[in-house]
Length: 198
Image 1 (cartoon, rainbow, N blue to C red):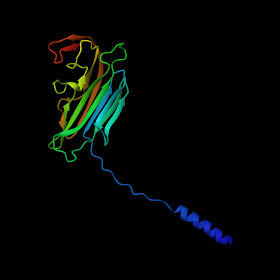
Image 2 (tube, one colour; image 1 turned 90 degrees about the vertical axis):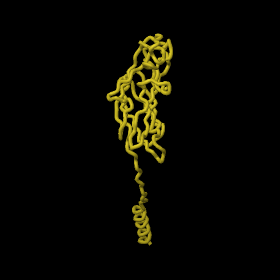
Image 3 (cartoon, one colour; image 1 turned 120 degrees about the vertical axis):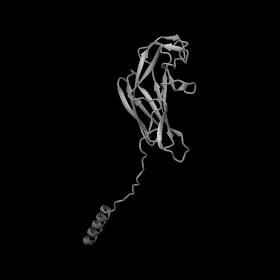
Image 4 (tube, helix red, strand yellow; image 1 turned 135 degrees about the horizontal axis):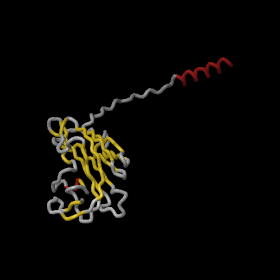
């Protein structure tokens, strides 16, 4: 009888030790990165960047630390059967005014980077916050050519490592530094927005 119990116990241990569940892991294909922008935050406030399509995820949000913080914002958008040209991704940046201002005007700032998939397998920058047109004026403020009020007392500057204006290629890689500037707004008939902040 003792041998019977011993055999049963050893059988249970043997079965338990060899009862390993094997799960099949499927390989997920990841599209290659098409846009990679390194942001340098030279402001004294955090900057929030939302990529409408990031690295395999929609509305990919990154908060970049102030005073020299860096982050790489990427997109691996793909055509997915759409007709070209078509949207790839937009990088929306929410900016805060310098903390040294008691009554900042405006209370927040923004700029957008927009990328588009083109025929021939390239991606193109179609909005970089540096140029002005009536169709793009919501894409950057406050900055030169985008000062909308006589009460504006700060703006930001973008410093690019490479020319971002209509940058195009199989991939786009660049670096942008965001710098704050305290200023005083004045009427300026030569400015597209009719104000300058110096």
